[in-house]
Image (cartoon, rainbow, N blue to C red):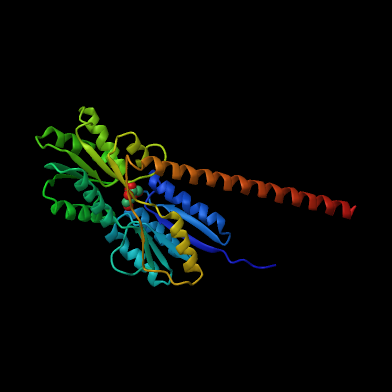
Length: 326
Ligand code: FRU
């Protein structure tokens, strides 16, 4: 019989807590399930640099065939990723970046473009003098830096729009609520909020609502996830004015993994597209995702039927064998 080689793929994920990461993990596990010679092991970094360094060290010791990393922060995760790469393990960096060039390939959305597109969108809908509050992602993580650069670069060139305040976060909404409450006590007038993800955007809306200000300030987020409390739904509910789609790239990541395992050449930089989701296209986006989810369920029930048939077949074979022995 043919000996199949099983390739060990280890993924050091930043954390398992939020829906964006859950969606990414799920799409990767589905792709891995289609590929019987890939064994995908996803480790939960718990959004901690220390935990993630331990996780990557573990995957190096296990001698995985491909290492995937989404680094919590760029700088402190760079040395351990370099260690893996220099030991000969192909490294795929996803979503958040490391420093330098010691990795095989990167795949993720263009975060500079995400910020720039959010600003261009604002500039296209607002001609009056307006004040913006920027709510930033975790300092030291590349999407926070790049989203901010892209956003401010366009706003600085737009006469009527001004970023008048910014708040730092750890990507989660609880981390901004007190700062936002304090800011609203001051005399700064805010017309718009650009939040670096939809969880921060929703948190900001909740604080505005406490003060009855939710109609006065319009919010733009990032991620555009389908499902309950996802960005698409928040746009449909009018909680967000818009969200910038930031694809998880789970499917595409697994395709790159297969290419690397087949010794095919991969591009160093693989960019996933972003688009603006607002009231004009939110419903279309939702319908598309619903269809994909339905297809996924169909595939799973087909798979179950096949499994059942295989089971029946092997039972029949055993019965036949027993009959023959008798
Ligand atoms: C999920 C997340 C997203 C954000 C991305 C940036 O963990 O916080 O909301 O777009 O990470 O890396």
